[in-house]
Amino acid sequence: INRLVNPSEGEIIFDGQHLENLNGRKLRKERSKIGMIFQHYNLVGRTNVIKNVLHGQLSNIPLYKSLLGLYRHEDKQEAVD
Image (cartoon, rainbow, N blue to C red; front, side, top):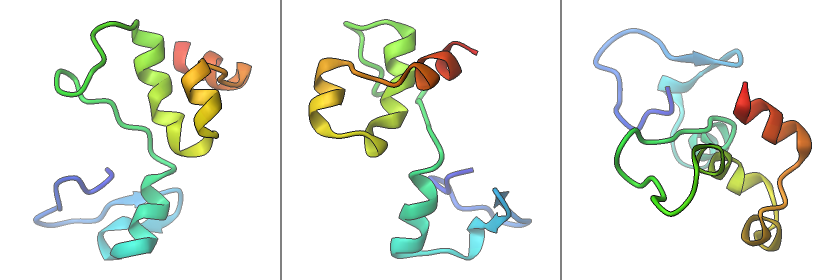
């Protein structure tokens, strides 16, 4: 969905936006709305699943909050769901 791999055909529509037509800053802006966790690569082994999922919010919170693990209750709940 986030165009880490570009489609060879078809459309990618996320939140009403055609992602296959975006580049540069516009693509980065849309990517910031899409959390992505690799299944094996780049997982933080010393932490738990919930914190790995919450790392998808890093672009939306200040650095000090991420370092202290101060995620919003709503984000934690969504990670569990």
